[in-house]
Amino acid sequence: QVRLVESGGGLVRPGGSLRLSCVASGLTFTRYSMTWYRRSPGKERELVATVSGAGNLIDYADSVKGRFTISRDNDKNTVYLQMNSLKPEDTAVYYCNAFHFSTPPIRYWGQGTQVTVSS
Image (cartoon, rainbow, N blue to C red):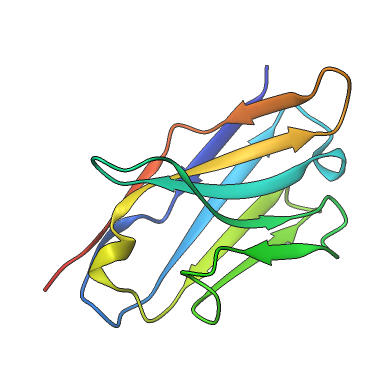
């Protein structure tokens, strides 16, 4: 059974930092690209950052470039999202996603972790 378990969310003041973690089990981790998404109330789900299975291809949403850093540790089956200079508009539930480019594609989701940026 595949599981993605996020942690690290919480309440932080504007300008603060948080590090999210997502531990994967039940899959061959290096075969999956890992992506962080977020969803705020009343908004569509947004891709935040993604990293390839080998960790050599990374991309970010324009809204987080220069503030967020995605990384992965394939020995620990874990992907991280370091979030710095947080803004109130970063408030959302953050979801971890594992994606395998197969036919049909395979996708797994975590349960989400709440991030609230407020003074």
